[in-house]
Figure 1: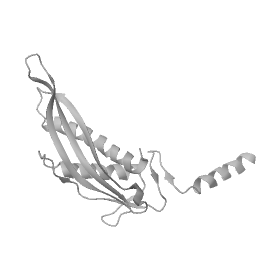
Figure 2: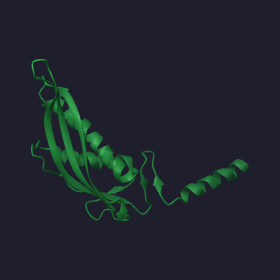
Figure 3: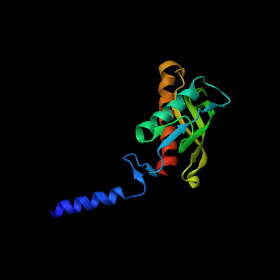
Figure 4: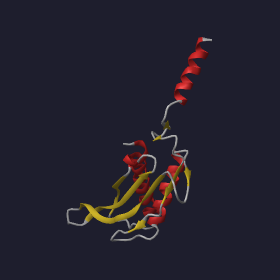
Length: 167
């Protein structure tokens, strides 16, 4: 009986909290029920077609999978928007005869986040990540897909952490 009373008390305390927590570390106000992700334009000096669509979809998928919020087209409680501002390939290491041994693809995304319920949480921030690959390999096909998947996975998780986990 004592265990039952303690369990009920514990559940009542948890349900009375004003912030929802999830296993992903997100702390979302109970009044927040929706999010929208506006299309991220590709404004990088070097444009790789389709990156803007892929990044936008990757961010939407992450938010759907890691929160219980509803995706809406407009008037979301949380709004994500921005642009891809960097897509750059540069050598990172050289061989003894001054040729590139390894290249690095770097992608940068400028993100603006708005929390309609908590304007103090709004921010504009640049996120970037990179993928290293051998210089003897061309960044096409499955190699490019792997690179973009890894880069976008890291950037979207960083955006999630900055906006909802407050890291």
